[in-house]
Length: 188
Image (cartoon, rainbow, N blue to C red; front, side, top):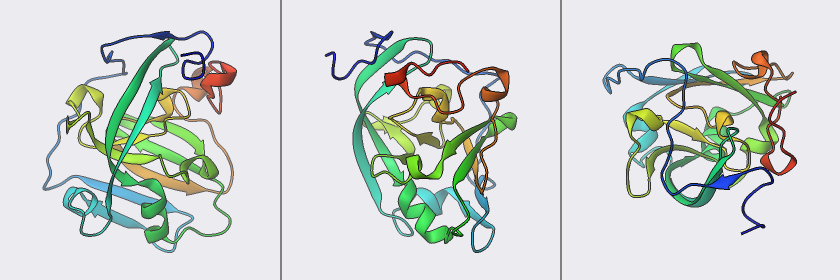
């Protein structure tokens, strides 16, 4: 297991719930994912456009999941749209190097664009064969499995493409700007 569990982490069999604030309500008729910043044009996708498989192919990936609070859950199966497919549709401008993920209630987290353009990074709505629970980010969660879980923003509402890095919610409060679990980049 040492090749799958980063230093300072311990395994859990359950799926702990950690988040700031309350779980937001979801109305599929009004929900939109905004893609903006350094893209060809501001876009707003409906939930059906994201999840139906007609605009973007649906993918399944199996990954491990590591929380900054030192727990790891192995062998998670996620279903969703690959970030790389959404990014191609958005026509990213060459100057874009970073993405600020925007969740509900003002939550944000920063991620280098290169880290999101991996085949296993998803905008996920299913986990282990069932829709995500609201506590785990339903209707849509960014899933960046090679970084600590706070980078996998719950209740995703926007992706902002940026030329320069900027701290998100937890990064402004002392968390590491990158968050690599293998290097124990918990705090700055």
